[in-house]
Amino acid sequence: MPLPTHLVPTLSRIGALMSLLAVTACGGGGGGDAPAPAPAPATPPAPSALDTELRGLITTNGLTGDARGSRVLPTVEAPLPQLGKLLFFSKALSGNRDTACASCHHPALGGADGLSLSIGTGAALPDVMGPGRRRADAQILVGRNANSFFNTGLFDQALFWDGRIESIGKEPGAGGSASGIRTPASAFGSADALAGPNLLAAQARFPITVAGEMRGDGLPGLSAAQVRDHVAARLGNYGSGAGALAPSDWLARFRTGFGQPTGTAEQLITFDNIMRAIAEFQRSATFVDTPWRRYVQGDLSAISDTAKRGALVFYKPVAQGGAACVQCHKGDFFTDEKFHALGFPQIGPGMDNGTRDDFGRERQSGNSAQRGAFRTPSLLNVELTAPFGHAGSYATLTQVVEHYILPQDTVNAFLSGRQWCALPQFADLGGCGGDAATVDSNTRAALARMEAIRLADPAGGMPLVNLALGSPEDTPRLVAFMHALTDPCLKTRSCIGKWIPAAQEAPDTLQLNAVDAQGRPL
Image 1: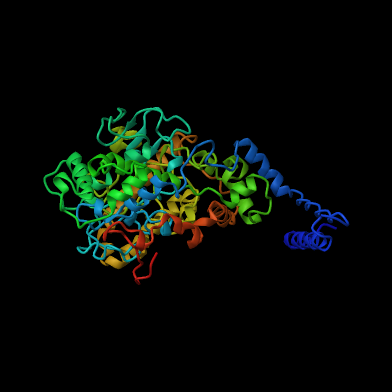
Image 2 (image 1 turned 90 degrees about the vertical axis):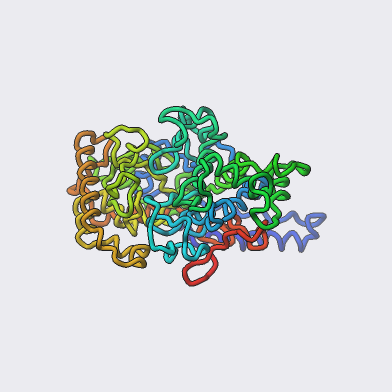
């Protein structure tokens, strides 16, 4: 009769200890009897029928469990990511010196900010993050939910919800480094000559030029290029930035980060170097060692049976009772990096079209057929990144799954119950229901677009789930499966803390040492 699996590790350790005692008693192998043989490895459990069925789908979808593939990514301990970490947490990069990259993308909050819509510059308490972070004027200026910066080094095609940082060639495994990169500073489809070496370096150029994100009103009259140059000069205490900040240790940190011990501030503290260092820090924040990975690679006990059944629903086609989630959440990285209209509720200020709506990919491509389409997010570590959707309208993964299965019912419940008003960010502001008519109109328009697209193009739109073939347990099963996509490091402060600088690491007095609304350090 095979041993219970939970006893195998204990008995193996006992066997190893007995071997060690035998060696010690006989003089460490220098004479006398030979040491006792090591215990035979435990026989792995036989696959269940559930495992066998799931293994077939794993093979069909070509999964390895390893989202990194052959990429060479830096470790956070390397000098340049270490410099990038300090820059990522520095409020010195913002126009008003009140906002860091980490103000909207903090490792302790799943690499995002725990809010539906980000609060960048102008926060009443700049070091407060998560629920309770709000502007002093109670406005919300940023129209979209913050993407996690975790695993962004694995994207090859585009960054941001609308793909406004985009690889021209979209070469697999290259992260945008093999061809030109289009940015908001270049025409759609055309490369930006100043984009930098990869998608993440290109992305790092833009938040400090956006008023609601990091620029604020502190640098009036400057062009985007002048803002970048001035921020670098300010950090390096030279040129237009000389004397603008208190004395700091930044030059020494750049010398270490770039391995140039005699470099001057003018040589080293440039905006190109700032974006390179921040990009390397982000590339180091790769968290893909999930229970699902272990399962795919052969550890049948790595995930629960509930999660396994959720995986079957995730990967099975609709005709076989599945939800065909893999139609968009493909591969080991769980995204096709393409743009899809899903009809998620539209809340908040929207994106600059005067109607508090968000046209998504159409804002970049000019193609009206892409109105309301947003880039497919990766599902790795998704459980840590609530609220969900491009506007952060759904508070739980259960709501997200229900939207895919019963979008009309889920949206109707959202609107009739004014559920966005219960989200912590909006409940904190008060007076939320005053925009109910606008939320209703924009959301129903988005839902209608989604329905039209999926009826016209079932293979490219949101899957039409066959409820008759499904089960009421499918939603909790899918949620359990998505929980199996979380790297355990992200739930352990001693592990994730390597990506958060300690207060004593600060090169100046402007490091973000984030706290929650109760003042507890993140």
